[in-house]
Image 1 (cartoon, rainbow, N blue to C red):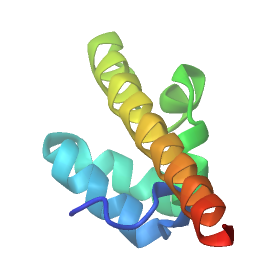
Image 2 (cartoon, rainbow, N blue to C red):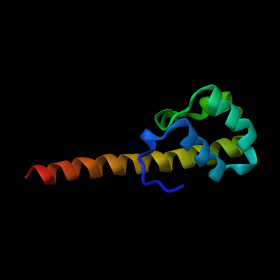
Image 3 (cartoon, one colour):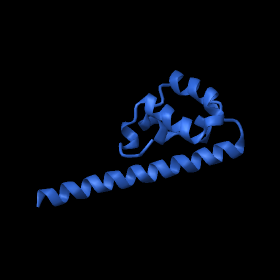
Length: 93
């Protein structure tokens, strides 16, 4: 799945696609939790370690990997926001 669409606009289904690509071995447990809690892209960007535990991610190593991946998504989201702001500034001139 490409990141052509901003993460904050992802639906629950798109979050499931991302999780499937990133963590196929853990998909069964995460799939249920994502649907149960309706984790959209906006919610995904806000997840912290204690949220991961609630979603069933117990292993410290797996939590750290997911937190790193989530940080990368947050950075990509920030870059998209800045790009949108700059585009609006230049188009207004």
